[in-house]
Amino acid sequence: MRLSTKGQYGTRAMLELALYKEGPLLLRTIAKNQDLSERYLERIMTDLISAGLVRSLRGKCGGFILAKPLDEIKLSHIIQATEGSISPVDCLDDPKSCKRVKYCVTYDIWGRLKDEMQKVLDSITLADMVQMQKKKTKELEKEMYYI
Image (tube, rainbow, N blue to C red; front, side, top):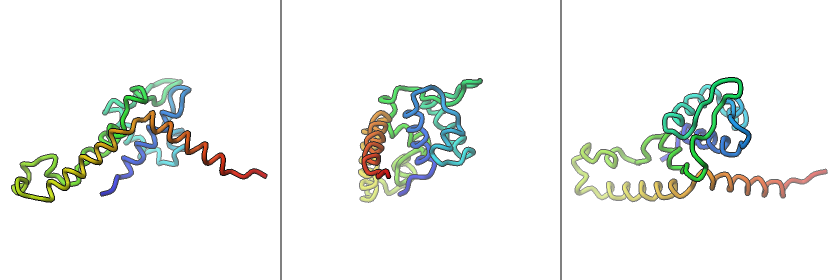
């Protein structure tokens, strides 16, 4: 199971918005800072707006801002908005789609996998990610050697 680029880029864009404290960010700025395609990012931002995670502001000082406080946005919200269901198999979301559900051992295993992934994604907020990024940046600065 792999996370698509929509989930990866959506998460990076949300982190970029969370790290920027000075107001709305332009789409081109987010794309440039995160090394993403502006056209692709525009589609991802539409998903994040629809999910109520991001707001778009028009005008001279327009751009994108977070729609909720950092500690209210979980990684699971971002992944749900960009990827949809995290179920590894369709029958977890629609048990009626498979007649074997009642006696299928793999159904139970895939259900456990989904539950564990959901726990991890629910346990991390955007505020946590900001702190993780700051720590990582600080560690990288210590490794830098200046002449």
